[in-house]
Image 1 (cartoon, rainbow, N blue to C red):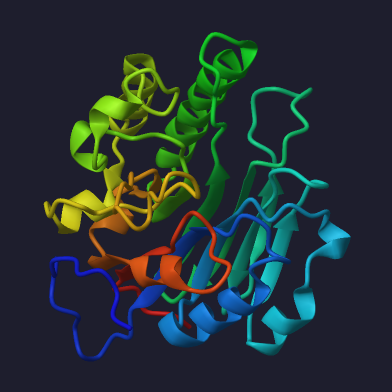
Image 2 (cartoon, rainbow, N blue to C red; image 1 turned 180 degrees about the vertical axis):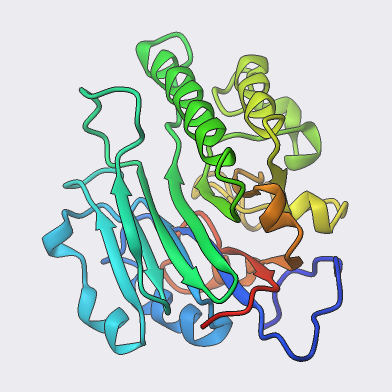
Length: 281
């Protein structure tokens, strides 16, 4: 089953095997374990950012992933949220929790450094709040979380290292990122304030990897379980990989594995991946 096509950004140099980095909101790692392992075997990513694992650290099914050759870093939460990193390379400097609010106990952020022959590669797995209903404190929390994420990015960009901020942003950046944008006008994912905050984040010096490689319509990453959204292709693009300038310089390809949505007991999200021309140790 082929991945959704994406335009080639740069030809991959034959003497460098690209580092493949992916993000996927699995909507419960226990429910999606078989699918996750099947997808890993098919796509062969080197680093994976997972969101909505919906389990505490101790309950994460580590053994199957370790048997597949991955190192793990997990920041879980019972029943809700939860993020994780899988990596074929050792994970250094693991940090959990988005800085800026000591009382925030939501498990929505984890970052780590991977050492390569060309220096440090920093990867963060992000599960940004949904924010609905927008007339409640849930939306205030979403906007404040986005401002904290911008502060984090501003600080990390000063390091001038390859940085990948990947995850479920719960943001539809533009009308082109929805099959029916009009249906989302009152939703927290598409409100002008939400899009303004996302644009402010990107404008710090980050690049949306998917839009850097393709202007194609219909590049969706999420289809609701309700109202036959998948069957009608009524999708939206809310899972993003944002790259710092040094990471963008290495970008060679990107894609969306939309076919995973048709698998048995699917997540409502599908994996998104990029290839970086980075020489590893």
